[in-house]
Image (tube, rainbow, N blue to C red):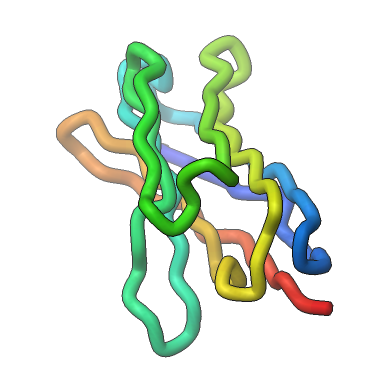
Length: 114
């Protein structure tokens, strides 16, 4: 079975940093394009960032310059380093794997508040 598990979320003050992880199993991880999405209550789910099988990255405009997406194929893990966090970054962050088929993790809550 495919299993994606996010971790690393929590409460952080504005301007702070967090690193999220997404541990993957049941897929050929190195072949998959990996993505981070987020969704806040009452808002549409949005793409935060993506990294393909060759390590090429792409970011949403709202996080560009603040967040860094990376992957460790030896550990089958996707990361999202979040810096200079803002209250508007508050959301559930979810990991997505895609290589034809698409799989989702359960999400991890990030709350940015003073």
